[in-house]
Length: 96
Image 1: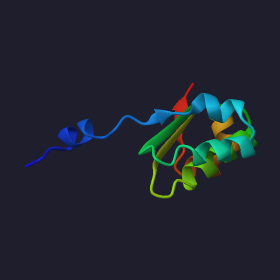
Image 2 (image 1 turned 90 degrees about the vertical axis):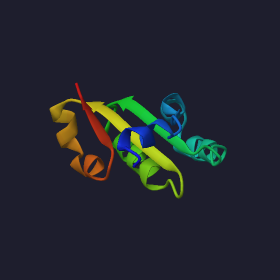
Image 3 (image 1 turned 180 degrees about the horizontal axis):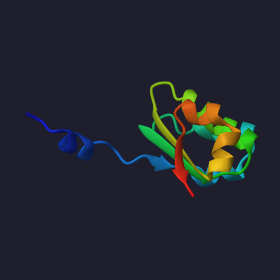
């Protein structure tokens, strides 16, 4: 019987595209994502910036048709409470 831990070992490490997310505007980032279609999984981890950036991260997470995506925002309780909908949609929170 295969255990859960051995299954995790076979998953590819997600490609970190955090710097691209932060440095590109929305349209540049969408173009960039098209070039990443062959990547099996992508991840973004950022510090809290503002509500619009948090919503962009939520959109990234929800638009990953057939591609495994993960998103994490490092946020205080106050920042977390500003946009609960983003975190309820699957964006993870790392407490700071």
